[in-house]
Length: 174
Ligand SMILES: [Zn+2]
Image (cartoon, helix red, strand yellow):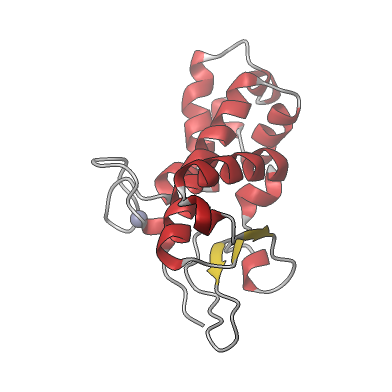
């Protein structure tokens, strides 16, 4: 099984340094670690936020689960962190749809599992806005139940389902 590293697709010119050596990769924008880092940085400017309250005023305590809890209770900071991450993922997904014309887009991984509703809704919307309409219409979004995509590694995968050319490749690790 071949998996491309969509997580290292560069989304932002001169963006944040990624551990792969490049800058502005999808991973620096939408991985669990990236979202946690953004939250820890931004919460300092939002001492009134529920997130700050949940972290008991200690930004370094903030983890993805805490952000998800705050987002569920409509904390604007937490919601915006997930929305922004989902927008980046949605753009990457739109690119995958346009290039690969897949039948299935599989979204898994820690970020999606932790904040499924808010992430999936936004990813779909942004993908629809940015992919070629005829190709977007052919795509079904699914969540991996089992297999490598449900594991800690996490993934977005585009799957071509037609007989003979099934490939689970192009994984990303949000
Ligand atoms: Zn990278």
